[in-house]
Length: 113
Length: 113
Image 1 (cartoon, rainbow over the protein chains, first blue to last red):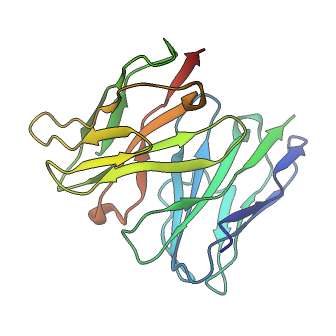
Image 2: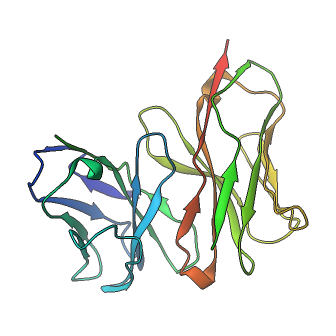
Image 3: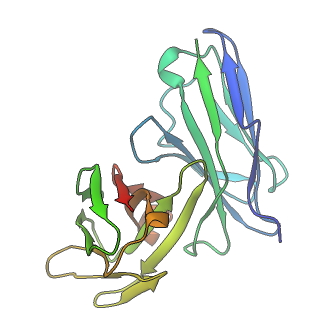
């Protein structure tokens, strides 16, 4: 079956622009996670959904970052007024049930100029 | 809080050499431990995992044993191949933290023919 997909794969934004990154989890997966991976670093947790409920957003670095999953499947990570420090790869992962193996998407590489 | 410390890279070995990448962790409770691999140009993939003390995870000739007494989960392979060249991430998750994954900073491995 299809794995986790993310779009776009690459995004170049000018500083101050808003961006929206999409994640399509594996069908039927209840849990969805977003991670941020800076160059040369390991991924860092941003936020977590169980179905449509956002249960943990402790990793979001600022109030410019917003994530949603309104119907419990597709999720969107939105970054408002992008800054250069937001340049990173944004990874989405899904699992079901909670506590089981997380499957990662290919990531969206964001470059803010 | 929970954290993972892994051997800094890059690590360069000749084909058929023995590989060890060290990983230690700090965690409350009883975390699950993982090794993820990121091949050039590809997404993050689960390599192996162990969910309780003394468990050994294995896959593709790689092994790691969950050592609670030394809080370690070192990755080993007896004979590496050029195709093993990748970045390896040690990671943990715990049910108490909603299963979000905490990653180490990654170790880049290069294998010479």
